[in-house]
Length: 447
Ligand SMILES: [Cu+2]
Image (cartoon, helix red, strand yellow):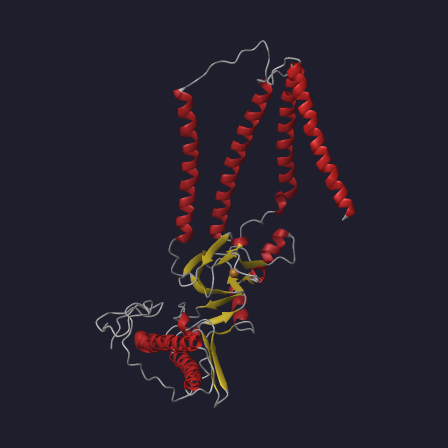
C-alpha cells in the first residue's frame, strides 16, 4: 500500500515536471523569435528514420506473433462444410494481410522518404479522376469477391440436407445439452414446450417427467394430471383464504386466481393435443433416444435440429467449424458431415487426449462455461455398440403409464383466438376461428 502510494506520487510529479519543461521550452522559443512549426533538419531526419524503424518493428512483431501463436489456432477442419469455411477464412486472411502490408508499408515508407527537405517543394496535386476510379473500383471488386464467396458458402450451410442425413435434436437449457436421436424412423417425435414438467401419482407412488416436452398419449395424460394437481392445490389455498383460515393479502389472492386461470388455459391447450395429433400422436417418438453426449459416424451427414428451453444459446462445434444459435420458441438447424474419426484426429494431432466437443458459444448465465458436451466420431459398428450401451436411454418413459381416472373434463369458457396471447378475450365468441395448435402440427381446431 505505502509503496504503491509513493510510486503513484512519483509518477504524478514526473508528469507535472515534463509538462513544465515543455512550457519552458515553448516560452524560450518564443523569446528567440522562433515559430512553433520551425523544426531543425536534424530532428526532422531523426523522425523520418524512426518511421522506418517503427515499420520494421511493426511488421517484425506481426510475423513473430504469427510464428509463435499461429500454432495455437484450431487444428485442421474435420467436416465437409468445415473445410469450405476454413478455406474461406484463409482467403480472407490472405486478402487482409496483403492489404495490411501494402497500406502500412506505403504509409511509413512515404513518411520516411518524403520527409521535409528545404530544397524540395511539394507537388500540388489536387485531383485525378483515374486515381479515384482505381481506388474505388479495386476495393469494391475485392469486397464483391469476398461477399459472393461468403454467400455461396452460407447458402450451402443453410441449404436443405440430403435425404440420407440423420436427424438429431440438440436441446439446450441452462446449463446443459441433451441430444435426442430420431431413432430407426429418422423422424423426431413431436414436442411441445407446454408438456415440459413432472407429475406424481401419490396413490401408486410413481412419477413421470418429460424434460423435452415430447408428445404422446401418455405424456399428455400425465401433464393433465400434473396440471390438475397444481390447480387443486391452488384452489384449496384460495378456499382457505375465503373461509378466513389463511391470511393472504388481496394481491396474493389475485395472483393465485390469475395462476389458476393460466393453468386452466394451458390444460385446455394440452387437452387439444390428443385431437390435434390424432392417430399420429405416438408415431415418431417411441424410437427416439436421448444421451448426454454425442456419437457421430464418420462420413455420415447429420441434420441437427436445435431448440432452447430458456434463453439464447449457441451450438458451437469448433473442430467442425460449425455454429448456430439456439433460440427459445423456434427451431434452428445445422448440417455437419464429420470426415475424421476421433482416433484419426488423435493420430493427426499426435495428441492421445484429443476429443471433439460441442460447447455453448453464447454467454447464457453463470454456468455458461460449463455448458459442453463430449463428441465422439467413429464407425457405424462403434455407433451401434455405443447406442446399446449405458449412455443412451429412451426419450419417453411410457412404460410409466398414467393412472386411470384423470379428470379430462373441458372447461366451458370460450377459448381465446390466437395461441392464448390475448388474455382478455373472455366472453367473446371465437367459435369460428381456426386455431393453430402445437409447435409441430398446425391443424384445424374442431369443437
Ligand atoms: Cu448456453
